[in-house]
Image 1 (spheres, rainbow, N blue to C red):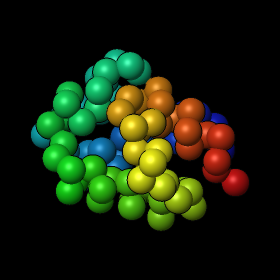
Image 2 (spheres, helix red, strand yellow):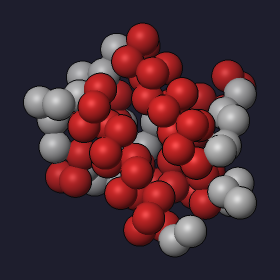
Image 3 (cartoon, helix red, strand yellow):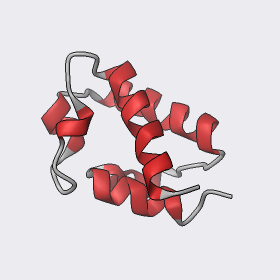
Length: 81
């Protein structure tokens, strides 16, 4: 799976939890939760959806790596089978 494929899945899931936002307009280093006004419950729903789609479990200790789009892609790309 390419980084582009991973981004498409991330954008689709972000659109589900933050339908009023535009994930594709995010800077790679912008704080995703702040930029799209995602609360902690929606963020957890987002992580669960990514886990289901990509087969990657994200332990709580790694949540901070999901603060930026760049961090998400790097983390997921290194773990997708």
